[in-house]
Image: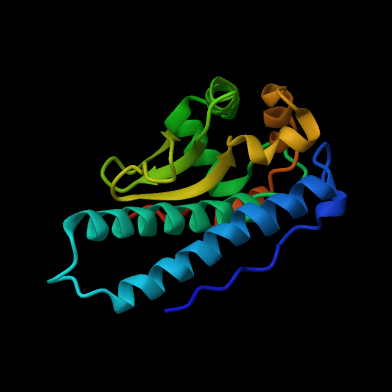
Length: 200
Protein backbone atom coordinates (compact mmCIF):
# COMPACT_ATOMS: atom_id res chain seq x y z
CA UNK A 1 0.00 0.00 0.00
CA UNK A 2 1.43 3.36 -1.03
CA UNK A 3 0.75 6.45 1.07
CA UNK A 4 0.28 9.96 -0.31
CA UNK A 5 0.49 13.30 1.44
CA UNK A 6 -2.84 14.85 2.33
CA UNK A 7 -3.23 18.46 1.20
CA UNK A 8 -3.01 21.19 3.83
CA UNK A 9 -6.52 21.91 5.11
CA UNK A 10 -5.52 25.36 6.38
CA UNK A 11 -4.13 28.40 4.57
CA UNK A 12 -0.56 28.73 5.93
CA UNK A 13 -0.48 32.42 4.98
CA UNK A 14 -3.39 33.21 7.30
CA UNK A 15 -2.27 31.72 10.60
CA UNK A 16 -1.71 34.04 13.55
CA UNK A 17 1.84 33.92 14.93
CA UNK A 18 2.92 30.99 12.72
CA UNK A 19 4.69 32.00 9.52
CA UNK A 20 3.86 30.57 6.12
CA UNK A 21 7.52 29.53 5.74
CA UNK A 22 7.40 27.57 9.00
CA UNK A 23 4.18 25.74 8.15
CA UNK A 24 5.19 24.95 4.55
CA UNK A 25 8.63 23.71 5.63
CA UNK A 26 7.09 21.59 8.38
CA UNK A 27 4.50 20.18 5.98
CA UNK A 28 6.85 19.45 3.08
CA UNK A 29 9.97 18.33 4.94
CA UNK A 30 8.79 16.68 8.14
CA UNK A 31 5.35 15.39 7.23
CA UNK A 32 6.39 14.73 3.63
CA UNK A 33 9.54 13.03 4.88
CA UNK A 34 7.50 10.70 7.09
CA UNK A 35 5.28 9.71 4.16
CA UNK A 36 8.28 9.04 1.89
CA UNK A 37 10.04 7.09 4.64
CA UNK A 38 6.93 4.99 5.27
CA UNK A 39 6.64 4.12 1.58
CA UNK A 40 10.32 3.16 1.42
CA UNK A 41 9.95 0.97 4.51
CA UNK A 42 6.84 -0.67 3.05
CA UNK A 43 8.80 -1.56 -0.09
CA UNK A 44 11.55 -3.17 1.99
CA UNK A 45 9.03 -5.11 4.06
CA UNK A 46 7.23 -6.36 0.94
CA UNK A 47 10.52 -7.80 -0.32
CA UNK A 48 11.62 -9.25 3.01
CA UNK A 49 11.75 -12.99 3.59
CA UNK A 50 10.62 -12.91 7.22
CA UNK A 51 11.54 -16.58 7.78
CA UNK A 52 15.15 -16.06 6.72
CA UNK A 53 15.76 -12.42 7.70
CA UNK A 54 17.93 -11.68 10.73
CA UNK A 55 15.84 -10.73 13.75
CA UNK A 56 17.54 -7.32 14.06
CA UNK A 57 16.41 -6.48 10.52
CA UNK A 58 12.82 -7.53 11.16
CA UNK A 59 12.79 -5.66 14.48
CA UNK A 60 14.36 -2.52 13.00
CA UNK A 61 12.09 -2.32 9.99
CA UNK A 62 8.92 -2.91 12.01
CA UNK A 63 9.98 -0.30 14.58
CA UNK A 64 10.70 2.23 11.84
CA UNK A 65 7.37 1.40 10.21
CA UNK A 66 5.60 2.31 13.46
CA UNK A 67 7.61 5.53 13.87
CA UNK A 68 6.92 6.66 10.29
CA UNK A 69 3.23 5.67 10.41
CA UNK A 70 2.56 7.52 13.65
CA UNK A 71 4.57 10.52 12.48
CA UNK A 72 2.43 10.66 9.33
CA UNK A 73 -0.85 10.34 11.26
CA UNK A 74 0.07 12.81 14.01
CA UNK A 75 1.27 15.38 11.49
CA UNK A 76 -2.01 15.04 9.55
CA UNK A 77 -3.88 15.59 12.81
CA UNK A 78 -1.68 18.57 13.67
CA UNK A 79 -2.18 20.37 10.37
CA UNK A 80 -5.90 19.58 10.29
CA UNK A 81 -6.21 21.19 13.73
CA UNK A 82 -4.91 24.55 12.44
CA UNK A 83 -6.71 27.32 10.61
CA UNK A 84 -9.25 28.36 13.21
CA UNK A 85 -9.49 31.25 15.61
CA UNK A 86 -8.55 29.39 18.78
CA UNK A 87 -10.75 30.31 21.71
CA UNK A 88 -12.97 27.62 23.16
CA UNK A 89 -14.69 24.59 21.66
CA UNK A 90 -18.45 24.46 21.40
CA UNK A 91 -21.23 21.90 21.57
CA UNK A 92 -20.54 18.29 22.52
CA UNK A 93 -16.79 18.78 22.60
CA UNK A 94 -17.08 21.67 25.04
CA UNK A 95 -19.41 19.64 27.27
CA UNK A 96 -17.04 16.65 27.27
CA UNK A 97 -14.01 18.81 28.09
CA UNK A 98 -15.93 20.52 30.88
CA UNK A 99 -16.95 17.15 32.30
CA UNK A 100 -13.57 15.44 31.96
CA UNK A 101 -11.31 18.32 33.04
CA UNK A 102 -13.61 20.37 35.31
CA UNK A 103 -13.78 23.14 32.74
CA UNK A 104 -12.26 24.31 29.47
CA UNK A 105 -9.82 26.61 31.28
CA UNK A 106 -8.52 23.72 33.39
CA UNK A 107 -8.09 21.57 30.26
CA UNK A 108 -6.24 24.36 28.46
CA UNK A 109 -3.96 25.03 31.43
CA UNK A 110 -2.98 21.36 31.54
CA UNK A 111 -2.55 21.00 27.76
CA UNK A 112 -0.49 24.20 27.45
CA UNK A 113 1.64 23.31 30.48
CA UNK A 114 2.42 19.92 28.96
CA UNK A 115 3.47 21.56 25.70
CA UNK A 116 5.68 24.08 27.42
CA UNK A 117 7.23 21.31 29.54
CA UNK A 118 8.31 19.61 26.29
CA UNK A 119 10.09 22.78 25.10
CA UNK A 120 13.73 22.02 24.40
CA UNK A 121 12.87 18.33 24.18
CA UNK A 122 10.87 16.38 21.66
CA UNK A 123 7.41 14.95 21.56
CA UNK A 124 3.72 15.54 21.22
CA UNK A 125 0.84 16.60 23.42
CA UNK A 126 -2.32 14.78 22.37
CA UNK A 127 -5.91 15.28 23.43
CA UNK A 128 -7.38 11.81 23.05
CA UNK A 129 -10.58 9.97 23.82
CA UNK A 130 -9.92 6.86 25.90
CA UNK A 131 -12.22 4.01 24.95
CA UNK A 132 -11.47 2.29 28.27
CA UNK A 133 -12.53 5.19 30.49
CA UNK A 134 -14.92 6.87 28.05
CA UNK A 135 -13.21 10.16 28.86
CA UNK A 136 -10.94 12.70 27.22
CA UNK A 137 -7.33 12.74 28.40
CA UNK A 138 -4.25 14.83 27.67
CA UNK A 139 -1.55 12.40 26.72
CA UNK A 140 2.23 12.85 26.53
CA UNK A 141 3.91 11.15 23.58
CA UNK A 142 7.49 10.91 22.37
CA UNK A 143 9.35 9.32 19.48
CA UNK A 144 6.08 9.00 17.50
CA UNK A 145 5.58 5.62 19.17
CA UNK A 146 3.82 6.37 22.43
CA UNK A 147 0.06 6.14 22.27
CA UNK A 148 -2.64 5.38 24.79
CA UNK A 149 -3.93 1.96 23.79
CA UNK A 150 -7.49 2.06 22.49
CA UNK A 151 -7.60 5.86 22.41
CA UNK A 152 -8.63 8.11 19.52
CA UNK A 153 -6.45 11.23 19.17
CA UNK A 154 -8.46 14.33 18.33
CA UNK A 155 -5.93 17.17 18.77
CA UNK A 156 -2.14 17.03 18.48
CA UNK A 157 0.48 19.63 19.34
CA UNK A 158 3.88 18.93 17.73
CA UNK A 159 6.68 19.88 20.14
CA UNK A 160 9.62 18.72 18.07
CA UNK A 161 11.92 21.68 17.36
CA UNK A 162 11.17 21.58 13.63
CA UNK A 163 7.63 22.74 14.43
CA UNK A 164 8.69 26.08 15.90
CA UNK A 165 12.43 26.79 15.68
CA UNK A 166 12.25 28.78 12.41
CA UNK A 167 9.85 31.30 13.99
CA UNK A 168 10.62 31.11 17.69
CA UNK A 169 14.13 29.74 18.15
CA UNK A 170 14.29 28.38 21.68
CA UNK A 171 11.06 30.17 22.73
CA UNK A 172 8.90 27.06 22.65
CA UNK A 173 6.40 28.55 25.11
CA UNK A 174 5.54 31.37 22.68
CA UNK A 175 4.95 28.79 19.94
CA UNK A 176 2.55 26.84 22.19
CA UNK A 177 0.56 30.05 22.77
CA UNK A 178 0.47 30.70 19.01
CA UNK A 179 -0.74 27.17 18.32
CA UNK A 180 -3.60 27.62 20.78
CA UNK A 181 -4.69 30.79 18.93
CA UNK A 182 -5.03 28.84 15.67
CA UNK A 183 -6.98 25.74 16.71
CA UNK A 184 -9.81 24.87 14.36
CA UNK A 185 -12.26 23.51 16.92
CA UNK A 186 -14.79 22.45 14.27
CA UNK A 187 -12.23 20.03 12.80
CA UNK A 188 -11.25 18.76 16.24
CA UNK A 189 -14.90 18.18 17.16
CA UNK A 190 -15.42 16.02 14.04
CA UNK A 191 -12.94 13.51 15.43
CA UNK A 192 -14.67 13.17 18.80
CA UNK A 193 -16.27 9.72 19.10
CA UNK A 194 -19.94 9.77 19.99
CA UNK A 195 -20.73 8.73 23.54
CA UNK A 196 -22.34 5.34 23.70
CA UNK A 197 -25.89 5.50 24.91
CA UNK A 198 -25.99 9.30 24.84
CA UNK A 199 -26.76 11.95 22.27
CA UNK A 200 -23.71 14.12 21.52
